[in-house]
Image (cartoon, rainbow, N blue to C red; front, side, top):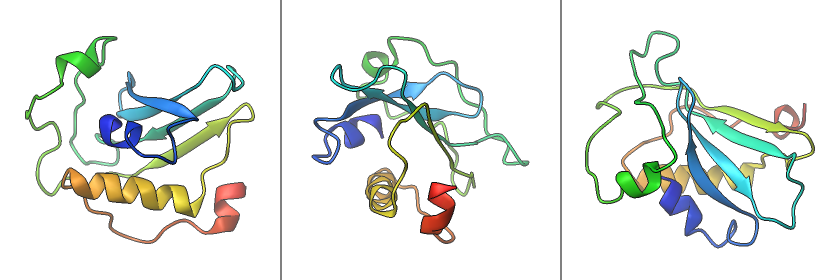
Length: 125
């Protein structure tokens, strides 16, 4: 997923994506040098919460090379999870267009969105 996002032209001059080493699983935005280094933006996948039974392996700093070309399945078929959007310290807020990019990337790895997008107002609040 990180590689798909990294290859997306909308993000090419903004940031690079890496897995975030947190229990529920997530993807961290690593903003380029010209942006504020205090920005924090992340998509938490919340696998393992609310009875989904998921369990993420520990993420270490070599994960992008260690998992390159690896086809191990870490989310079992029909696993449901909730996405939690985090944007703090002045980082750009999530937009509906951005969420559609994420949805397209998720589709490419076999993860399908169920439910509605958040409202524009809820992305701002």
